Length: 438
Image (cartoon, rainbow, N blue to C red; front, side):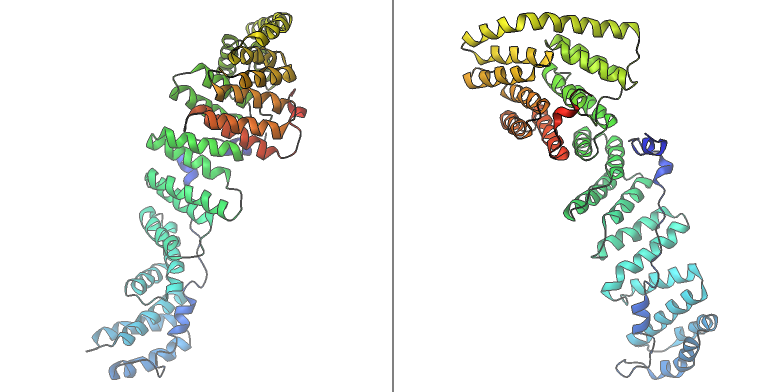
């Protein structure tokens, strides 16, 4: 992985990376300028005093003598009873002259005055606010940039997801993280509504926001959405850590969470501690083969040191697998005679551990059919995992859907089922069995 790709995956985004430059939209006020370019138009209601003073100014406008136009405008302040059209014409001349003269500060002031007095056509309001946002962005005035970019987004019917990203970044610069979260979410939702893939960085920025607001529930949902779009060990690692903290390290939850992460060819776990925790959980749960496969993947990817202590752990797991292979056939025969399906499921886990996925499927299905299974959500997750290893994606999908249906609403195992389903959808028709041994 190249260095720049690694940088994109850092979730705690440095403040410097949030700098926002708002681009100027050329000719944003062109339509308004054209609308009032001829202040003596017959349909307009101009005062006599204005017509007398305005004719030479209009000639200066036509000649594009902008400095002279600006110098002539103060005289209109003395009009005794100016009409609304008089005032709009003066404001329009000011807008044209300030832009033509290249006076950025005067142009910004002219736009603000034009907007404040309601002279802008509705279709131009958003673009004019964006001009102001660009002006204040160049002056590094974050508060005014945010004010006008927010008004641009609210006024323009053609905003794109990247506009919400910019607004989110501006709120982050202002340390308004709740508002930043909302706008980054809008960027993601708008992209999805346009059948576009949301950018990875939008999820990353939201992660930073949720960390700042200490909203771990929303952070977990965001990370889960992120990993379905961009599977990566860093994201899986954060999800697993949140499951661990929020479930009080529930063994069933954690075994399923580790299995989900470590079995994804594009995923994995990001730290030595996570792989060792997976191995420990798997060993305690009666699945030493998972402990072996997890540690071996960690070593292969250079995350787990190839040290003697870790090799001893692999050896311990291998020995347990060898022992299980000898005892499992007898245990399966005994389980067949037991009326409780829970026994079949436990033996099925043993076969899953040894890599005999076909036998695992047979035993778990038999146990579910018998009934008496303590955790149908857990059993169906195991069944789906074994079927996916066999490349039977349609059957695996059905098992994961059954796991979700059996899980209490909002439970961790239900969420894990959703992540399995997302992985199947992401991988399409590619055979999962091809990557099982990687």
